[in-house]
Amino acid sequence: MEHIYAPWRTEYVSNKDKSSCVFCDIVSSKEDDELGVLYKDEYCFIVMNKYPYTPGHFLIIPNFHTDNLETLNTDVWIRINILAQQGVAMLKNELNAKGVNIGMNLGVNAGAGIAEHIHLHLVPRWNNDSNFITTISNSRVYSIDFDKIYNKLKSKSHLYFKVP
Image 1 (cartoon, rainbow, N blue to C red):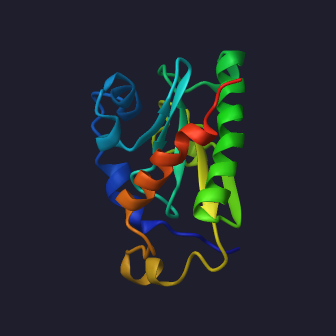
Image 2: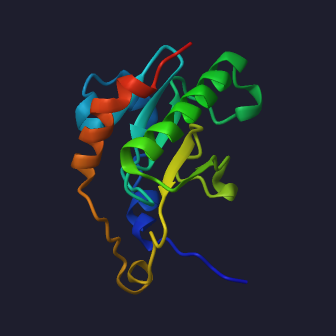
């Protein structure tokens, strides 16, 4: 069996403020650009992952606090999936992603870093986008600055995220 390690996430998963939900804080905030928000509507929002696996990694998140996918309102689930479809198009067209991983980790035992508020990951992928440096030096090497990626995607988000 092979093991995949993500040592760069240690600080993220171990230093959470348990008094509030980071995603609920984003919903109520007006500081969208400072928080990396790409899109908001009445059902959910899209935000750049603060600790991305690859450049351009973002999350689609319901606007209300829930850890329970099985009781999620159908309209919200449909909206999340529509935005995921549109988000894949954006990642492929604007970042030239050659593939995209999409997924949810439901619960701590499934690997969720923020288990108390469900969220869908969209992780753009390219050939050879990972290497040994992460394992040996607890570092990630990105070819582009986080803010540059955010600004590029934010400036194009209105072209992709359209509710039918």
